[in-house]
Structure formats: C-alpha cells, structure tokens
Length: 597
Image (tube, rainbow, N blue to C red; front, side):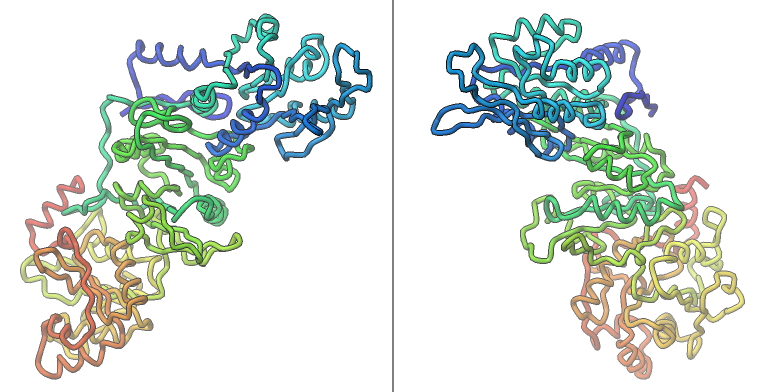
C-alpha cells in the first residue's frame, strides 16, 4: 500500500494513497484550519478561569501551551487590579492596579514592568515551540495599538502556533475587523463545546492528522514460519507498557534510545488507543480507523519530541480505534519500513502483536494496574520498577543483535543436536534455511539473550563453525535425556533453556516467561503444554539442580524425559498450539514455501 508523506511546519502528514478527488477534499479542509481564535465572554464573567481549565486540558493532551493569563485581584469583594502570568513557568508580575481617582474613565493604571513582562512571554523566542499561544486579554488598549498589540501582530505573521485572543463580547466586531484577513474563529468561553472544539482543532492543525477509513489495508508480515501463534511477531520492536500514568514510560524509552541511537537508527513510536470515534481531545480527532503523524519538532514538551531529543531517527504518533489496532500497526509499519528498528510506547499493542521485547513499568508501592495493563501484564518479559527517576532494569541486559531486541538472561541455552533425524532421512540440523544451516538459525536467535550457549551433540567437528561449546553425551546412544544430563553438568547456570535444533522460530517471549516462572516460583522444570495435553520437553526450562533426578532415572534404565517429571516439581504453561518444528521432509518443504523458497 502506498502513502503520501507531506511536509508541514511541525511534522509530516501521513496519508494513505487516495484518488485526486479524495486528496483535494481533505487537503482543502486541512488548509482551511484557522490559526486565530477569539475566546469571547462577558466582562468579569470568568473568562480567565475558563482559560486555566483549557490550559490544563490541552497540556494533558500533550500540547505545549504558552502565552499570558491576566488573573483578577480582589480585596473585600472589590476588584483591585490584574496580574500577568507567564504560562511557560507560571511566574507572574503586577499588570494593572486600581487608580486612586474614582472618577477616571478607565479605573486601572497599567504598569510598565508588567507590560514588558507580558510582551517577553509573547515574544517569538518564548513561543517558538508552542502549539497554542494564549493572550489574555485583547481589549481597548490593544485596539489603540498598545499593550500586547505589537506582539500579537508579530505572532500572526511569524508563528505556526494557534493564537487565542481573549475578548470581551462588546469588542468582538472591532477585533474581528482588525484581523479580518486571518479568518479567526469565535469560541464562546461559557460553552463547554468550546473546549472540545479547540482541542479538536489543535489535534487536527498542530499534529497534522492523517486519515484512514475504508481504504484497503496491507497485511502485517508474520515472522513465525511453519505455524503461527495467535499474534504476528515483530522482533525489531521494543515495546514499553506501564501499570498507570506518569510512571516513567517515556523516560525509560529515552534512556534506551540514548544508549543505542549512537550506533543504530531507531524509530520512536507512541500509540494512543481510542475507544470510539466520539468524544473530545484525542478521540474527536480520529477521522476513520487511525491517524499517523510524524513528529519533527524536537523542542516542545510533548513525549514525541522527547524521543527525538533522545536520539530517535524519526518519531511517529499512531492514534487508532481499539478494534482496528492491527490495521493501524500494519499501516505504521508500512510507513516506517519493514526493516526499521523501533521503540514503541503502548500497552494495547501487545493484544495484537508479539514484539522482540516487552517491558512494563510500575511503581514499587502500587498494586493498582489500569485495565489495559492488567490484560497484558503476564505477557511482559520483565516488570521494571520505577522510583525517583531510577529503574530496576540494568540497561546492559538490553541487547540489539542483528536488528533484533533481546534481554540478556542469567541462564544457559542448550541446543539439542544429537538426534539421528530418522524421520527426516537426512541431518535436519544442517538443512538450509535462508542460506544458513537450521542449527545456525536457531543459535542466531538465542545469541544475545543468554550468558552461555551449549550444543549437545556427539560430532564436535560438524558444529565447530558455530563457535559455541560442544558437549558430548557422557554415554552415547542413550537418547535426549542423556544429552540433557551431560549439558546440565557442563552448564555454568542454575537456569537452563533446552531447545531442539529443529525449531526454526524460537518464541523467546515464551522462553523468558518460563525462565521467570522458574526463578520466581521455584519450579524445577517449566514445560509448555497444549490444551490437549501434549507437552514440549525439548522447549523447556530445567534447573541444574534436577541433574540428580535425571541421573537417577538414567541409572534405573529410563530414557524418556517425562519419566523425570515424577521426581521433580514441574510447572506447566498452557499453549494454544504446539511449538512448530521440522521433523519430516514435507514439513521442511512447507517451511521453505512459507519463507518464499
């Protein structure tokens, strides 16, 4: 599927390819979005108070809001004057105070220091990264050419931000005439819908929304050959979720970016899931199934800008309806390219895909996980605790190997390659997969995720090219149980992941989950088992301490791995389908067809 990437001031508009008629209609709408707004209300009706709520709402949506507010000052119920507040840092200065002359036409005197203070807050330098600039208020002084007038004039011709002028109702015609060329939009400060409209337009205007509704969707590539799990896999993505808000999700993403972006091009992604197409804020800006925007302004306070500053080569924000998550992800991957390495912030995305690595962040004292987090908590490769800006994750454990994210486990991987391949009719460990022997493909997936990799085999010369230690069976011809016993004796780790050499795609997320169960729960063996009771002893975790039970079984003449289970504490993890492997030539040919030969 093709896309148009159109440059804008603060980002890029990402649109699926459409007809010229569709494009003309949509770009005409986008081009007519206003950048001047009139926030209109009655005199002393609470316009500034309403603005404070608008500022809070806009910032919660990730917008950078600057400018000035002019809160009223009262004493014993009498209006005594106004201050001016710089929205960048909430500092304030006196702006106007009541005159002693009770008969004056205008009862307040403006203070030069306050005017200078406000004009600095409205200067180009102070507003250059703003999405919304508020001017409270624009009145008779400005209409006469003084006050904030020169700053507003400059902003309208030089700023890419939306400009919101606070105006008393009786002055709207005069201000509207003054700025007629800018086609300002009038918003009633007393109307709740005004909040929704300004947030809606900010999303549409400042974030350059791309649309997708009934357009055909490309299909996401499945990276699990010869049998898929319930989710497509995307090993080049590191997914970061969180138990709740403000626990440090973006900061952890930035720390990982700072570590790896010096040597790798990494795309930053933020995903916002929307329950439906109605509502306000982020929700109301969705036109169709999803929107994609590329962030290019690294100077704002938005999370996407922080990812750019941390070193991301490009940053995208995907907003997507809950039920169209996979469609939105597919479109996004089509935009960034199938080979892109990425770091993505999202919980919900884990519903529809399996990333190379999935980290979830929580605070140590928190037991309250939001709904979207609870649903995927058990799928996390690691729960990372966040406290005082520090994380319980050693970043040296995070690896990027051949464009694939990995988490270095304090464990050993044991690859079983001592079988006779009788059903295959030839040595399956050396069958070519994408130009490499199958066993090399298996070891390549394990590399970077384990402190040690051992090959259980009796032909040392055949596998010497792999560069890993070859462990021969203590007594040849005794089957895989003897291979496990010999490898466990040679292992340097208490936890050991045992996998057959005929598994073309290793679900490392499942392996990490089993290792975690063994480490936390104390199980001797952790084995995946399908719903119909078939277990996978050659895709399982074994503690080194089970070596005694294994030797006892072998000494008693037992060769089946399952006969050791009765001697150990075994935990089973339920699978929807069995672990795909290659036992016959027909299965190998099916795998080759899946990989395109």
